[in-house]
Image 1 (cartoon, one colour):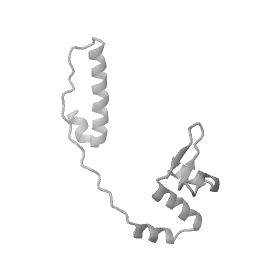
Image 2: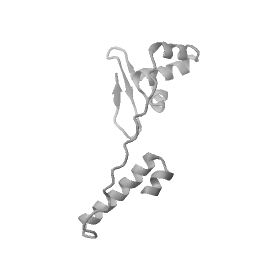
Image 3: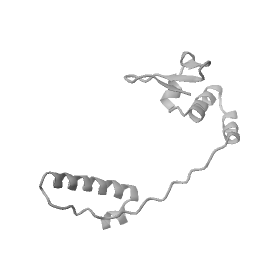
Length: 114
């Protein structure tokens, strides 16, 4: 683990260690070993700082877009739709009275976004 922690990113080291710890737990549960060698305390990754975008920033951005791109962007930013969901939205999927958009995904149930 010491070598991994100096040669890989912290998230990769944590994933590798988590896999190793799961394997050791399995080995204990099935009688292959009596105790786990996985007793390390890994460092906690620092929080990711993301800029906060306000409505003025969004307005400036979408004002330079085509109508189609503006609509797709606003569906993503305001309604939280993924790209494929926004691209698949049709006029029939918008319910103005309920202020919602029905999202249809193949093989999955319909999800409504408000």
